Length: 249
Image (cartoon, rainbow, N blue to C red; front, side):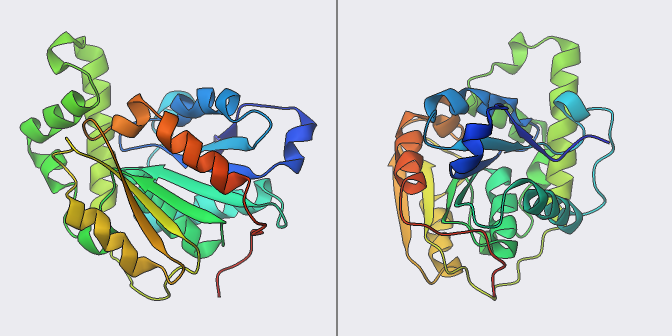
């Protein structure tokens, strides 16, 4: 079985730096965050969450439930990142939802999400991806991918993975308490047709430590297509005051 968490440096000096945990959107693997390690060189060690069924884990079956996936990620995080090491969690779209539930199990310095509706707005989210080909094409379009230009095998693999992750998300049930006691930052895009401003503002209800909404230009995957603004913010958070990993009360 593959590991749930990957990293892209073996330099032992990075173990003394803060950790950034990155969670990709539905249907994607974590290799897209590999370049973030270079961008954050000397600031943090970047880790990516790799769910089964993609990239180096493509032969492995999906977990049976959303909670099972979150528990596996949180457990491996506890074994991978030292308990006294500052941590920031970043998740995009479906990855933001998983990142939030991981953050409830460990206390990061901050939670940053992008293109992700607040947990209280997730009821039924993903059903359109499971049932509607137009919704799938919309996600391809916002990622800058023309579904007509993908070869049949590549498109089939992406569609299958998107649908599996969407099915996993349908099993999510939000339990409002306890609220996080760490700051939450939500990024949205002015051209995102899948997540509204109100759904982003809902993140204010999950924390007692402050919420900020940020806006960039583009579609649903704008932050991943041009990560410079969010990387600037993450750099500041990673260099901020000490907030060790610890169980959330």
